[in-house]
Amino acid sequence: MSPQLNVVPFVSVDNMMKLVLSIGIERFLTELAGFIEEDFRRWSVFDKTPRVASHSADGVIELMPTSDGTTYGFKYVNGHPKNTRDGRQTVTAFGVLADVGNGYPMLLTEMTILTALRTAAMSAVAARYLAPVGARTMALIGNGAQAEFQALAFKALLGVDAVRLYDIDPSATAKCVRNLAGCGIDIRSCSSIAQAMEGAQIVTTVTADKQNATILTDNLVGPGLHINGVGGDCPGKTELHADILRRADIFVEYAPQTRIEGEIQQLPVDHPVTELWRVLRGEAEGRRDARQITLFDSVGFAVEDFSALRYVRAKLAGTGFYADLDLLADPDEPRDLFGMLLRAGA
Image 1 (cartoon, one colour):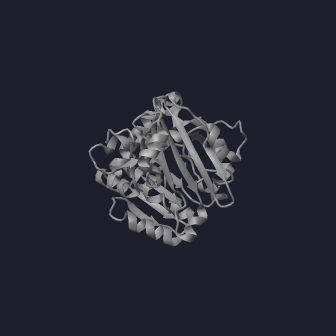
Image 2: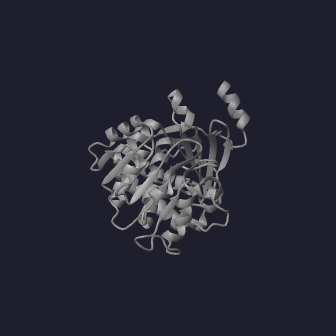
Image 3: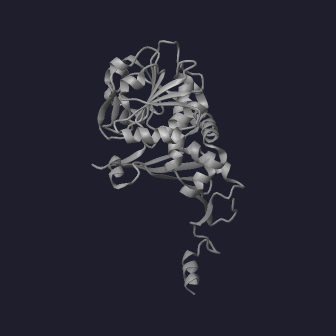
């Protein structure tokens, strides 16, 4: 990448798509999962804070920052479920990676596509430690923008080869069926959540409406199920009946954030949960036996975005899938910023 001090590599949506396709979606997900696992195993070095959120009646705008002491990263992301009515994305995002030593940005990139990939990779990383051994069938409840990424991540990392789809909007399910055709997964559309759950060892809930909903009821959850709860990710937005939470062993990314935004906002603040990094480091148990119900209460955390930014930067060299963005003022004399402005006018 360019050594010039005043330019920053910028990955546009078009270039992100080219980068992903040049690597291959499943390989991208697998390699990204490796970066996430690596960073979760060094969890203690990261600055950690719940995301900074600005809520409105229409949605939320958030900043998600972290640093490992050498590199700083943040993501800007929104969540506006009503956007689809106007032909807009529910979620959009961009991110920055910077050098802690001098404060200069090292990467600016779109993160709408990248967030979908890292969310799916994170789900599959958790499932490797929490899902039943040999699980091959997943129910996928909510077939919007995240669905295909989730299906492919579970295929690539866990060998899931059967996915049962359900959405209240049949056109969303039809879209998902089309997009996943020929990918090596047995895809079936279902007429109800109960039908989708039949025979599934894993269920992923990834719905978009910003409300306390009951997507899964307690009677649908049998022994041994792994629940990947992705959709509940802000205050007042949940997908699971509270009785399920009381029966499950719950795993989270960063408990102070998940207690605000996750399914566990329905429970007392002292209800026990396990942060996933402890499982990856061997400090806590994940799945103990075949009858245990496990829940990954996933809300997305800044360390995952940091991993995704770090991965993209590592893959860019020699690809040409970026542009040099003239982002930083670079006067001949660092203290003469005004003179730089005058010389530009001349």
